[in-house]
Image 1 (cartoon, rainbow, N blue to C red):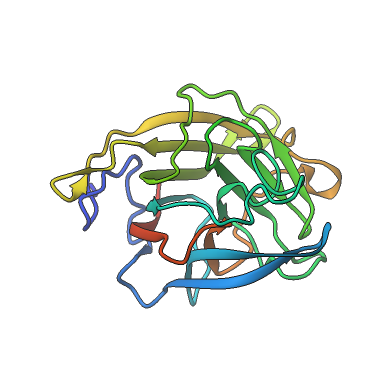
Image 2 (image 1 turned 90 degrees about the horizontal axis):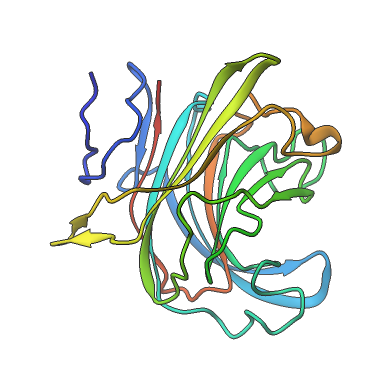
Length: 244
């Protein structure tokens, strides 16, 4: 039986896969970058993007639990500077991309990812997305069991979980989204995990070729991506684990 907490003191909500892979923030697989980015649909507009992530030598199994705590000190001036950039639009939150392939080119091998989206100003708009091929998104507003709050100027913990599960129509993808708004107690995670939403994708959360559930892992990296935030935005306790 796996330990109930990881090396950082973060509670595991699902048990580890036996002999499974675990990636943590102090591994060489973890990266952080700050780069200028343009939107295909907004000509001439440039914004700054903070990306945290893991890049592995081998693909992870499809069933994973991803965790990260992020301190968001403020938003950049580009947020809200264009009608298409801001709340419930582009560049408006943290997007955690799981199971996906590369996101730089369109085509049969691109994307295939589930995206758990967390608006900076709170709310449930666009909170579950499927991307295929890049940059085509199908955005869903999943009803929240616990409302997600505004977290500008605060630290917030996030957990996103995917696992394949049998359904009457074949295999589907069960998903869970949790957050911890209490964050730290004496420098350690408070582990007050609120279930934001859950569900099963059997094909309803997508369109065109991306309608089918993404049952396999397409790439060797995982992204925690934030547009319009300062370089001082920091990540803590990040991990990705293969689970049962």
